Image (cartoon, rainbow, N blue to C red; front, side, top):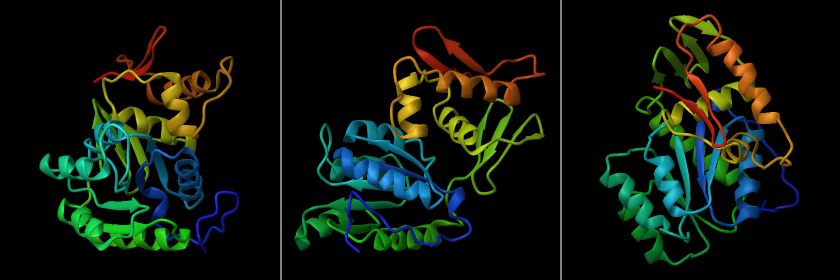
Length: 241
Protein backbone atom coordinates (compact mmCIF):
# COMPACT_ATOMS: atom_id res chain seq x y z
CA UNK A 1 0.00 0.00 0.00
CA UNK A 2 1.31 3.43 -0.88
CA UNK A 3 0.94 6.29 1.60
CA UNK A 4 -2.56 7.71 1.28
CA UNK A 5 -3.25 10.77 3.41
CA UNK A 6 -6.99 10.19 3.46
CA UNK A 7 -7.16 6.53 4.43
CA UNK A 8 -4.85 4.14 6.18
CA UNK A 9 -4.87 0.44 6.98
CA UNK A 10 -3.40 -0.27 10.43
CA UNK A 11 -1.75 -3.62 10.99
CA UNK A 12 -1.11 -5.48 14.23
CA UNK A 13 1.87 -4.20 16.19
CA UNK A 14 4.18 -6.26 18.32
CA UNK A 15 3.29 -6.56 21.98
CA UNK A 16 6.09 -4.24 23.11
CA UNK A 17 5.35 -1.44 20.62
CA UNK A 18 3.24 0.58 23.08
CA UNK A 19 6.32 1.22 25.22
CA UNK A 20 8.27 2.92 22.43
CA UNK A 21 8.74 6.66 21.90
CA UNK A 22 9.29 7.92 18.34
CA UNK A 23 10.22 11.38 17.09
CA UNK A 24 8.96 12.39 13.63
CA UNK A 25 10.81 15.33 12.04
CA UNK A 26 8.88 16.31 8.91
CA UNK A 27 8.05 19.77 7.56
CA UNK A 28 5.04 18.77 5.43
CA UNK A 29 2.05 19.08 7.77
CA UNK A 30 -0.09 16.45 6.05
CA UNK A 31 2.66 13.81 6.10
CA UNK A 32 3.68 14.68 9.66
CA UNK A 33 0.14 14.32 11.00
CA UNK A 34 -0.46 11.18 8.94
CA UNK A 35 2.60 9.52 10.45
CA UNK A 36 1.76 10.68 13.97
CA UNK A 37 -1.80 9.40 13.77
CA UNK A 38 -0.81 6.09 12.21
CA UNK A 39 2.04 5.39 14.63
CA UNK A 40 -0.09 6.30 17.64
CA UNK A 41 -2.78 3.91 16.44
CA UNK A 42 -0.03 1.28 16.37
CA UNK A 43 0.65 1.99 20.05
CA UNK A 44 3.74 4.19 19.80
CA UNK A 45 4.18 7.42 21.77
CA UNK A 46 4.93 10.07 19.12
CA UNK A 47 6.36 13.58 19.23
CA UNK A 48 6.80 15.74 16.15
CA UNK A 49 8.97 18.58 14.91
CA UNK A 50 8.49 20.64 11.75
CA UNK A 51 12.05 21.85 11.12
CA UNK A 52 15.61 20.70 11.59
CA UNK A 53 16.46 22.98 14.50
CA UNK A 54 13.51 21.82 16.58
CA UNK A 55 14.14 18.22 15.58
CA UNK A 56 17.79 18.41 16.63
CA UNK A 57 16.86 19.99 19.97
CA UNK A 58 14.34 17.25 20.74
CA UNK A 59 16.44 14.35 19.47
CA UNK A 60 19.53 15.52 21.35
CA UNK A 61 17.90 14.43 24.62
CA UNK A 62 18.26 10.81 23.52
CA UNK A 63 14.85 9.90 25.00
CA UNK A 64 13.47 8.33 21.81
CA UNK A 65 13.83 4.82 20.51
CA UNK A 66 13.67 5.87 16.84
CA UNK A 67 13.92 9.21 15.00
CA UNK A 68 12.11 9.41 11.65
CA UNK A 69 13.92 12.23 9.88
CA UNK A 70 13.00 13.87 6.59
CA UNK A 71 15.95 14.85 4.41
CA UNK A 72 14.62 18.18 3.12
CA UNK A 73 13.84 20.39 6.13
CA UNK A 74 13.81 24.13 6.83
CA UNK A 75 16.41 25.61 9.21
CA UNK A 76 18.71 22.55 9.03
CA UNK A 77 18.38 19.67 6.60
CA UNK A 78 18.15 16.05 7.68
CA UNK A 79 21.77 15.28 6.81
CA UNK A 80 22.99 18.12 9.01
CA UNK A 81 20.71 17.07 11.87
CA UNK A 82 21.87 13.45 11.69
CA UNK A 83 25.51 14.50 11.47
CA UNK A 84 25.11 16.76 14.54
CA UNK A 85 23.40 14.01 16.55
CA UNK A 86 26.18 11.54 15.88
CA UNK A 87 28.83 14.17 16.65
CA UNK A 88 27.14 14.72 20.04
CA UNK A 89 27.21 11.00 20.78
CA UNK A 90 23.46 10.40 20.33
CA UNK A 91 23.08 6.80 19.15
CA UNK A 92 19.29 6.74 18.65
CA UNK A 93 18.44 4.88 15.41
CA UNK A 94 17.61 7.28 12.57
CA UNK A 95 15.29 6.34 9.70
CA UNK A 96 15.76 8.88 6.89
CA UNK A 97 12.82 9.84 4.66
CA UNK A 98 13.20 11.59 1.35
CA UNK A 99 11.53 12.13 -1.99
CA UNK A 100 14.91 11.69 -3.64
CA UNK A 101 15.67 8.20 -4.91
CA UNK A 102 19.20 8.78 -6.18
CA UNK A 103 21.72 6.26 -4.90
CA UNK A 104 24.22 8.97 -3.95
CA UNK A 105 21.71 10.57 -1.58
CA UNK A 106 21.14 7.25 0.16
CA UNK A 107 24.88 6.76 0.51
CA UNK A 108 25.40 10.24 1.95
CA UNK A 109 22.59 9.69 4.44
CA UNK A 110 24.08 6.42 5.64
CA UNK A 111 27.55 7.91 5.73
CA UNK A 112 26.50 10.67 8.16
CA UNK A 113 25.01 8.12 10.54
CA UNK A 114 21.49 7.24 9.40
CA UNK A 115 20.57 3.61 10.15
CA UNK A 116 18.04 3.12 7.36
CA UNK A 117 16.59 4.93 4.37
CA UNK A 118 13.03 5.02 2.99
CA UNK A 119 12.04 6.82 -0.20
CA UNK A 120 8.68 8.58 -0.61
CA UNK A 121 6.12 7.45 -1.53
CA UNK A 122 6.24 4.40 0.69
CA UNK A 123 3.90 1.75 2.05
CA UNK A 124 2.96 2.43 5.67
CA UNK A 125 3.42 -1.27 6.43
CA UNK A 126 6.99 -1.01 5.15
CA UNK A 127 7.65 1.93 7.46
CA UNK A 128 6.37 -0.14 10.38
CA UNK A 129 8.58 -3.06 9.37
CA UNK A 130 11.65 -0.79 9.18
CA UNK A 131 10.86 0.63 12.63
CA UNK A 132 10.45 -2.85 14.13
CA UNK A 133 13.77 -3.90 12.61
CA UNK A 134 15.52 -0.88 14.15
CA UNK A 135 13.90 -1.53 17.52
CA UNK A 136 14.97 -5.16 17.51
CA UNK A 137 18.49 -4.01 16.74
CA UNK A 138 18.56 -1.54 19.63
CA UNK A 139 16.31 -3.11 22.27
CA UNK A 140 19.16 -4.17 24.55
CA UNK A 141 21.07 -0.89 24.31
CA UNK A 142 18.43 1.81 24.01
CA UNK A 143 18.08 4.43 26.80
CA UNK A 144 15.05 3.64 28.90
CA UNK A 145 14.62 5.10 32.35
CA UNK A 146 13.94 8.82 32.87
CA UNK A 147 14.53 10.31 36.31
CA UNK A 148 13.66 13.82 37.50
CA UNK A 149 14.02 14.49 41.22
CA UNK A 150 12.36 11.42 42.83
CA UNK A 151 10.11 10.62 39.84
CA UNK A 152 11.15 7.58 37.80
CA UNK A 153 9.57 6.75 34.43
CA UNK A 154 10.51 3.49 32.73
CA UNK A 155 9.34 3.41 29.07
CA UNK A 156 10.27 -0.26 28.76
CA UNK A 157 7.66 -1.28 31.33
CA UNK A 158 5.56 1.90 31.00
CA UNK A 159 5.68 2.36 34.78
CA UNK A 160 5.94 5.53 36.84
CA UNK A 161 6.89 5.90 40.48
CA UNK A 162 7.68 8.67 42.90
CA UNK A 163 9.76 8.13 45.98
CA UNK A 164 9.46 4.40 45.31
CA UNK A 165 5.65 4.37 45.13
CA UNK A 166 4.09 3.18 41.87
CA UNK A 167 1.65 5.63 40.26
CA UNK A 168 -1.09 4.52 37.86
CA UNK A 169 -1.59 6.91 34.96
CA UNK A 170 -3.99 6.99 32.02
CA UNK A 171 -2.48 7.03 28.53
CA UNK A 172 -2.78 10.83 28.16
CA UNK A 173 -1.44 11.45 31.67
CA UNK A 174 1.52 9.19 30.87
CA UNK A 175 2.21 11.01 27.58
CA UNK A 176 1.99 14.38 29.34
CA UNK A 177 4.39 13.33 32.11
CA UNK A 178 6.72 11.72 29.55
CA UNK A 179 6.85 15.04 27.66
CA UNK A 180 7.54 17.05 30.83
CA UNK A 181 10.24 14.62 31.95
CA UNK A 182 12.00 14.79 28.59
CA UNK A 183 12.27 18.55 29.07
CA UNK A 184 12.97 19.08 32.80
CA UNK A 185 13.29 22.70 33.79
CA UNK A 186 11.96 23.86 30.41
CA UNK A 187 8.72 25.83 30.26
CA UNK A 188 6.32 24.21 27.80
CA UNK A 189 3.47 26.35 26.51
CA UNK A 190 -0.08 25.02 26.23
CA UNK A 191 0.23 25.11 22.43
CA UNK A 192 3.38 22.97 22.52
CA UNK A 193 1.76 20.48 24.90
CA UNK A 194 -1.39 20.31 22.77
CA UNK A 195 0.64 19.66 19.63
CA UNK A 196 2.96 17.02 21.09
CA UNK A 197 0.49 15.14 23.30
CA UNK A 198 -2.75 15.48 21.30
CA UNK A 199 -1.32 16.21 17.86
CA UNK A 200 -3.32 19.39 17.29
CA UNK A 201 -4.16 22.73 18.89
CA UNK A 202 -7.47 23.20 20.69
CA UNK A 203 -9.68 26.29 20.53
CA UNK A 204 -8.18 29.22 22.47
CA UNK A 205 -10.82 28.90 25.19
CA UNK A 206 -10.20 25.21 25.80
CA UNK A 207 -8.96 24.10 29.23
CA UNK A 208 -8.04 20.53 28.24
CA UNK A 209 -4.34 20.95 29.05
CA UNK A 210 -5.08 22.66 32.37
CA UNK A 211 -7.49 19.87 33.29
CA UNK A 212 -4.93 17.16 32.56
CA UNK A 213 -2.23 19.05 34.45
CA UNK A 214 -4.56 19.11 37.49
CA UNK A 215 -5.19 15.37 37.17
CA UNK A 216 -1.48 14.68 36.85
CA UNK A 217 -0.65 16.87 39.85
CA UNK A 218 -3.07 14.93 42.03
CA UNK A 219 -1.22 11.74 41.23
CA UNK A 220 2.34 13.06 41.12
CA UNK A 221 2.48 15.89 43.68
CA UNK A 222 -0.37 15.16 46.14
CA UNK A 223 1.00 14.26 49.56
CA UNK A 224 4.53 15.36 48.75
CA UNK A 225 6.03 18.47 50.38
CA UNK A 226 7.92 19.27 47.18
CA UNK A 227 5.64 20.21 44.30
CA UNK A 228 7.37 19.44 41.00
CA UNK A 229 4.77 20.34 38.34
CA UNK A 230 4.61 24.12 38.34
CA UNK A 231 2.53 26.70 36.49
CA UNK A 232 4.37 29.66 34.98
CA UNK A 233 1.68 32.30 34.64
CA UNK A 234 1.18 33.40 31.05
CA UNK A 235 3.83 30.98 29.77
CA UNK A 236 2.89 27.36 30.45
CA UNK A 237 4.04 24.50 32.65
CA UNK A 238 7.38 23.16 33.80
CA UNK A 239 8.65 20.13 35.70
CA UNK A 240 11.10 21.54 38.20
CA UNK A 241 14.31 19.61 38.75
